[in-house]
Amino acid sequence: VNAETIMRTRRSSTTLHWAACACALNTLGAVVVALLLLAFFAITGPRADGELWFTAGASDAERVLHGEWWRTVTALTLHADSAHVFSNVGIGTFVIAAVMRSEGVGFGSALVLASGSAGNLVNAWVHQTLHRSVGFSTAVFGAIGILGGLAFADARRHIKPRSPAWTALAGTLALLALLGMSEKGSVDVLALVFGTVAGLGVGSLSAWLQARPKNSSGQWFAGTGALAAVFTSWWIALS
Image (cartoon, rainbow, N blue to C red; front, side, top):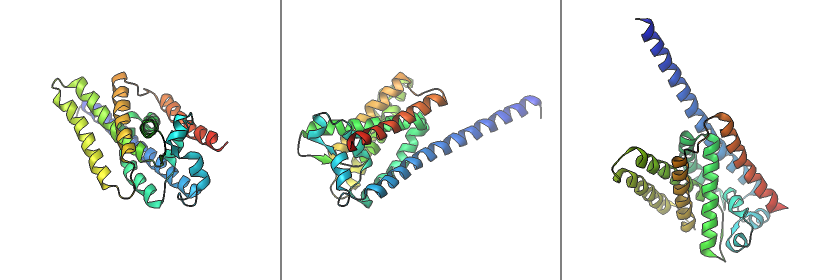
């Protein structure tokens, strides 16, 4: 065994080590998001017991359109009951981890939050009045849309035939239909659709602009910004 072979083996081992660390970090990031949602549900309780929180933070279409933009963010953190929050956490952990693997923990979190709040904004605009919605599912389906948008942009950038790119979009819409139909109870289908569409746009734009931060400080900045947006939105809602 010569020195070149030894060095190649060491480089390969180092690459695998860092890849495993990155995968674990991304999974941990998604788990932290899930735990924060569960912890906040423990504080607010279900809709029946948390009138203060739901009155202040639900995405009320009329109020959103009259300038209460923060509701598009705060509504993502509220859940009607335990089944609602656990279903969102169960699906969301996997898809958000996938977004974080692609875009990083901090920037991935910011993209998911942006797609979820954008979905709520469009949903409010469509309903105009007499509509209130809560739940992280808009952001979860936004994350699914982000993955589809990233795949679409990647296919368009590297593969000459158009079909692979459109296949990524078709797969995203098929997953939306499958998971949307699997939801039970009162489901705001339009919120899921708009979250997915917003995610497709956010993911495609991020990929085309190559917006992912290239260093850890950029990831920290994006993640801190996302967390600050949630805290600020609730501070305004409760003030």
